[in-house]
Image 1 (spheres, rainbow, N blue to C red):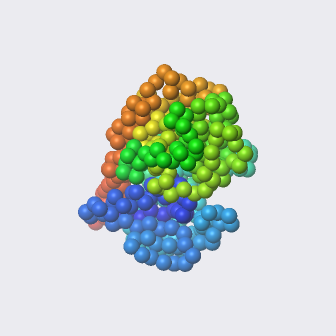
Image 2: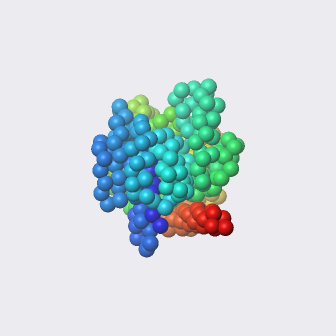
Image 3: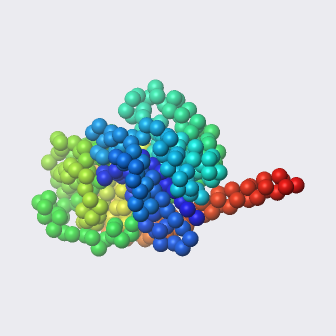
Length: 377
């Protein structure tokens, strides 16, 4: 089986989509009978080791992202490599090009709905855009043979738009990269923390939907005895005394050490489509305190952390205090690690993906054989 992934969401500072694609292709490449191709934007047409760059202009201030403007180059490259199944990882030009190539090759096309596009755009342009973008999402995703969503909340949202062929496909965590063994007590010394101070951490981009103002307000309420570390680009510059900031893109190895060294992850986001960082924290052996909203409500199970009311710094501060006063946070971290091992090991995720792919490709073969039989008859 030849699987081709196509997306514009692939850049040096990429988040969850690149993490998913890199992990997926590393594991698929080890399986017999599987060939993988990855089509991503680049400065020129170039192919090497299964990665195919298709020309696309860079986005100004886009941290390395490029935005494809025309379908044809993507469709031509997909048609040239002739995969058995195509997965489109974004809802823009490459998604339409994947559908065009799928029709030409007569192969199934999967759309993975990584981002909640209507909410993403309305956050930036205002709520008046919701209906327009929802219609666009429906027009695109109704054409895919299968739509995969990383969480139940996302699957339900697509179903509400009238898209029927939706399946939940959770993402995975690299259990070796994110592991309690990466704990490094010397990192706490860099922050000037004593042994009694609880180190809370958030990792991600400082975008509006992460609600970092709620985390800063929570830190003020918690006061002495708690320290919050924000890690990632576009973080706020003015923060309370018990908050530190690493305002840059941070390599996976460094993030993994900070997570394993912290006492808990805090996450105030209410629009997460999956919340990968929460599972990376759990894999690192620490519990999570998160807003009871979006996919975070699904991915922080009982015993692995606590949920708080959305947009409520006071309730999040209460949950943090409760985690360390009435619960054994260390044991909660151990349970969190076991939960991720059972449900989000990449091998489990790949098995799920392959079951979708095999069903779709076998259905295509069966349909083709039936059609040929009817013609001969």
